[in-house]
Image (cartoon, rainbow, N blue to C red):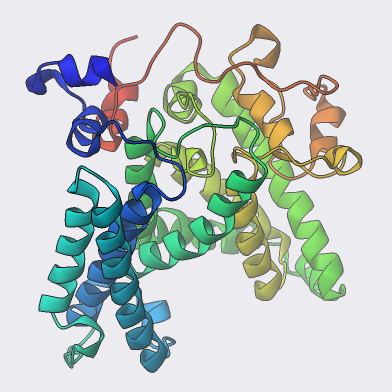
Length: 386
């Protein structure tokens, strides 16, 4: 921390600037006001975003979700979240010498209150042709963090690893962008895959697939998707031009539930588009495809987590954190291994399986190379020289 505090403000990264603002010499364990302050900020910010969604639903929410929200529960959740944010921020101010965490949490909650909190009257306006998924981001944070933050805290691979590790702000930006830019993803991924899938489809083969029991379709969908994922993923490692984009994901130097969000836009569009195309051409029932998409949303986060489950018998059949951590390992033995996302047997089939008995990688990242900080800078990084 001393290095951060001594560095000129003009040369600080965003993460270092935040560390300077919120740093003090008090410990951060339970009962010191650190956790309550951070939670107060998170809840205050999410409540503020939710209130903005009520004010501008046509611009800030997904049309697919907008009509499905139980508004009474949404309003109650906003108000309860605001009360919790203010209580936690106040507790932090009582417990910590430096009040920056508590003041920030109260300021965010105060802004949400000033905008009407959960009692906002929703305007009657038509749908907008262009919209963001701010509501999807709020739901994503609440659901994902609620599962993985306690999981990493209870069963960590690396004890003492802070949630605010190197790169956390960059990965938070990726998490935000991947949810808020949902319309961009839909246009760039879904529309081309659907159009091309209709051209490539073989109706008689699809009829056979659709006649199968739902559970069989779901299991086959996982297999087909992971085979497609394996091929695309391996190509991103082998083809130098594609590696320029995929190395953004491998630039993560600390693994946790947030690290999996770091994916370049080109990587996301190509990979998701081709995997979805494979599922559409195969002709699986729409519900089986949706079930797979729900699975991969959870599992992709799970395999990056700072979590060390002791289920050795399961590791051979289902991708667990140790399997994918070796894919990110900085050691030479970890280069170009473990490309599958769900089924390690696919890597065994193609000779790319690597799981040293009882060992985890010593570190992560790209040997000899470090990515710039920030989502915007990493977006243009692959187009530079080198």
